[in-house]
Length: 301
Ligand SMILES: O=C(O)[C@H](O)[C@H](O)COP(=O)(O)O
Ligand SMILES: [Mg+2]
Image 1 (spheres, rainbow, N blue to C red):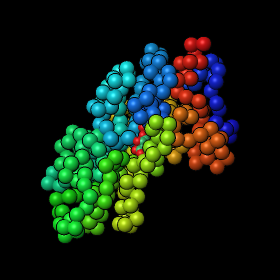
Image 2: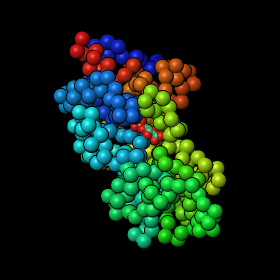
Image 3: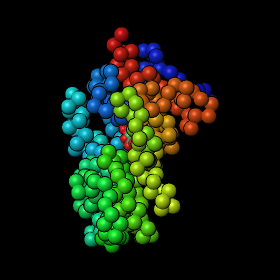
Image 4: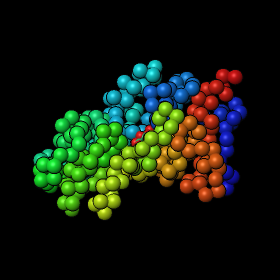
């Protein structure tokens, strides 16, 4: 099988665009780095919309809810509705409400930010932890007695927590030692690409709990096909006419390939050109480009 093809000419861009009706976009490392929009990303999205293409935004970043993401897009000058966004926080909330059917008297202990809390609330699910300011402190001697399994906690859910600490990890572990407590992760990305660097990813939040509890979480973010099935059910697209655009081989590209979609890889995030072209690359990518914005830039020249 021919290796990944780098798209650099007008003909290649047109052939690529004519191959797909639906585009699933990763966000961090594809559209933006942190709050910095990547070059010509907005123009490319507009161009795709003008050609009647459907856009779906699939991010593993659980720090924001779909509503919060519509505001981030707007701040960057891009109009996107909450309906077009499918994040790992939403995926986790849907899994708890529709698949697990978490009893109403049970709460979720959250290790993560407001995105998870808002999506759980939108599914009528109670939670503790998360952004609770009383937990943003060092553990105190009396905590070792006070922290006990809480029977009202039915699940521990781990996402990217920018305020992680020993106290939260302790509460989570003590509750995970109760076998009935469900262990979930919004995603297990090892790193978080922002500001041109790689910071600890959401996976580094659940890793200490995996080590200490000897339990593995169910991950609801890319490359989980449970997430893909939800997206297919909601958007009802033909996989062969849909393309997953991402900056990460082990999440975005695996997600697309295992879902039967086409793939476009961009070099503005986690993995490099060498990673994509490597004989032992974790997944075979169909096409790649230096950046998403090349679609607009190549066509306008
Ligand atoms: O650690 C994380 O959560 C991820 O690095 C990050 O959020 C990835 O987001 P995505 O690239 O899927 O938009
Ligand atoms: Mg990404």
